[in-house]
Length: 396
Image (cartoon, rainbow, N blue to C red; front, side, top):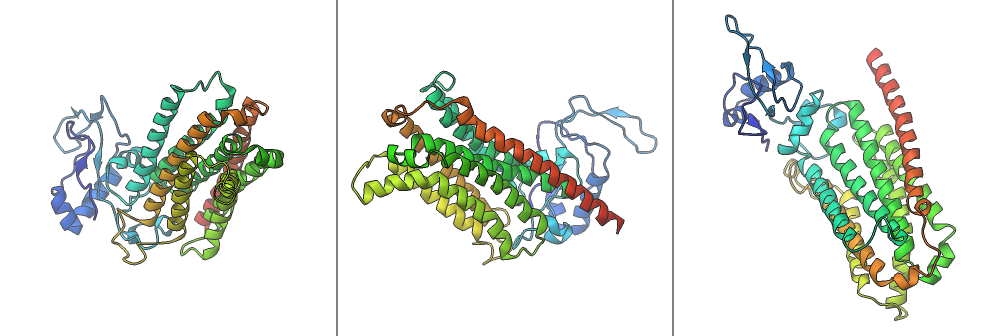
């Protein structure tokens, strides 16, 4: 189902784009009118989503130039799988693709259009808003600036917000061009690595029992730093060097480093669960939140690794309930429970972590800044490689 043909982003203002086409219902029912609408959009001179004082010239013979006020351009219908390059296609998805090589405004305004990336954009956009709200809510109960013991919590929250902001942005903008597609998803992978590392910092400080902390304190953060960078690097390699139809090895490149960093960040919780359910020690209500977090993360992994349900009925889940959308929702639920669990540990387990040496700005945020710098260097390197490959492709 392709929705959006001829509908403006804001119904209160006139569009600066004029098309001699049929109404939206007719556009959807007549291929000729749809093609005319797309071609008119592509060939139009305007390149902006918002013009507060835009002037449009009427190029019809004998007509004078006139001023038109507009807020947003008309949103054109989506296109089918066969109408986009192979790079932008998705397995078992037949409809709802956006056109490539359009103005940036086209993709930004498509946030308000139904296409096959809409739910991917909105699930993580909503997640970033909720986590920002949690940051504000938590800051009313603890002093993120003055209390250094709260800094690992702040690092975890900020890294999770970055994850969802980068993910939402990548799914919103990736259809613009081949180069933008690769670069936006490299930032998406950077967000995944930073979120994993922020969780490592947070769990190391609040979730570790004293006995566990003493054993791993010299290895825990270095392992998290290495795996965070490998997450971005390996996902980028999987994106760049495998083409559709993707072989199973591509999933291995993506899943192994993510599973590795998750194993590190969840290990303090596993230790507490063993103490609780095997030895009957240290059973607290906070573990319930951690179990919810682990359940949703496991579920997200199942959705990410599979093509269920769209593989059963190709074309029926193009807009809603695609496995990647379900993955997005599950990972959002996982991180929300994770933040609640860590905040509960911060409040109830202070007698444990305050007995250690206090965290510093360097120990809380240094790992994130280091990996971010390394990831940016990786993005620059791979971007240059992509540009070189594109030049060679054009010369053939």
